[in-house]
Image (cartoon, rainbow, N blue to C red; front, side, top):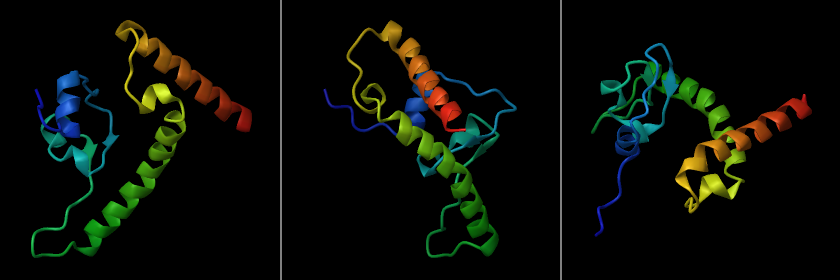
Length: 114
């Protein structure tokens, strides 16, 4: 039965992954409402209906985007491996191991570049 498309925040809640209370997390606008789960979360400010963002809010969004772009580049590099960009059809028990191996390969490539 079709359940509809779950939001990113709903998927995060269902995964039961918890951030350490001192961890800062930078999200995109798909995580609206994450402040209820994690107080050190930063999401872009949205323009109010029939209103405008102040210059401070625009600057905040710009700084947040500049910080997040580094993370997005890493995500793009990891999604070259099809295991992370498409449906995983193997044993669930080995998924974490395979993700760790891909991360190690990526980190090794970073070390070679330096």
